[in-house]
Amino acid sequence: MLDSAAMRDKVLIEGLEARGIIGILGWERKIRQKVVLDLELTLDFRKAARTDQIADALDYRDVAKSVRAFVSKSRYSLLETLAEELSRLLLKQFPVRALRLRLWKPGAVPHAKRAGVEIIRPYRNKTAYLA
Image 1 (cartoon, helix red, strand yellow):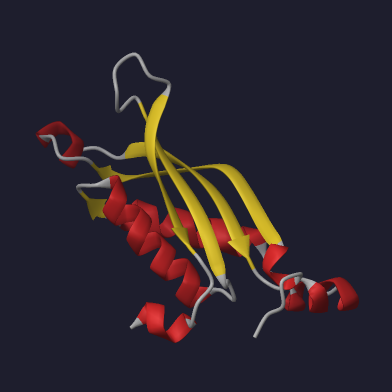
Image 2 (cartoon, helix red, strand yellow):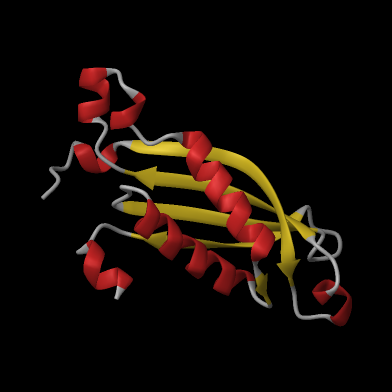
């Protein structure tokens, strides 16, 4: 079990852009739209800090590449579904114990900078969540 100090360690990725099919309107189903993601990924940094080796750390580039690939193949109607499925992928693929994902869709609401959703998946038995 992780102690409270390790539960405060976070990798942050802000403003990651990706394009995918997202939306409920007919025209939205035909084009790839931009979404912007902010990620907070909780994991234990202590080993990476001690060894100073990327093999013991979470590689931000791998996370970004995986997120962008997933979004580019997605065909969801709702941001909520994309956020849920993306959080499942991140928890399964990387040594992440908890996450906060903000998923923004610029231009979704007239006269607003952007609209979006936030999903938080706190630490718990990882296998129970993935079932």
